[in-house]
Length: 390
Figure (cartoon, rainbow, N blue to C red):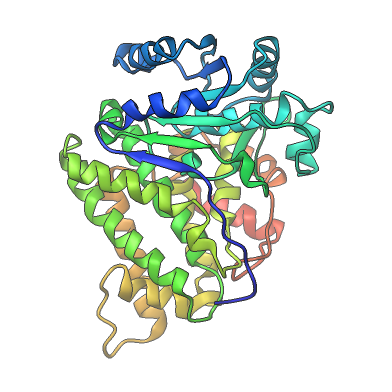
């Protein structure tokens, strides 16, 4: 294990078909004023909204709502939510939805009592909050982001076309509790399901493809990836398979709750590339990652060849006998590509509305990290985007 690290995760998870019942145990821990946060309204169609409202009323809560949180929450929507939460004197933000709703709620939680502009403070300067934080609880209806058990938040500035994430350091920003019922995810369209699956997979890859030491975190990551590949194939054929969907949900949480990052430098450049695309196109997050992943990994593979070889053998079962390291690594990425195509993922940026004319602008808003196997320069970023076009 590399370096020194601190691991703390205070989020309490309730998992399973009866998990929503435990909301009755959590609500008495907070004040009367609850702000219910949700998306476009699918929770009203599938009955989850009514179930949550009934529990809130049973616990005699005063309810305000922030509705219409979009898949890539905007800065304008953040300002709207801050105003609602302030006017309601919120004691708890209850996010009911997918990762975007959870992300958004955390952004509201650190902004309600903030005296500065939250975009400048949290998403430009990446400062930590120095104000009182409104606690967040989550009822998850879509899996992928892992936002139900981490301190991350992503907001899109629609004016500057920047989509920026901030992983806060204070564990108080993590949801105090999260309710995970796999049944709630089964009403999602196939496109959203597979986008979430790839988001999970890439979260693991972003932490796996870094460092060269013999790291316990990498062994955990390999097991999570194998489990996800197995369950994703089942769910792709039968989205109502409870066992597969429950395994996918549990893997999503552990893919990004900081566990497999322990002792790692991590990479995160696929996310930076994908988020830059998302800022320009408003495309589904998991699909932006799928479109840029393979060109990026093939570009950095020579700099982390040993790990890519290990990925091929331990995750994809590539036979390494009598082969050169590069050939083994390439077979691993080829196996990954076949799996992605089997799921029906978007494999190029043109499908997401990106044109050649957009590429330089997207490159200009791409944040560059230097913690992976290769720090990209602007020319490399443009080349990767161009390779991702077709």
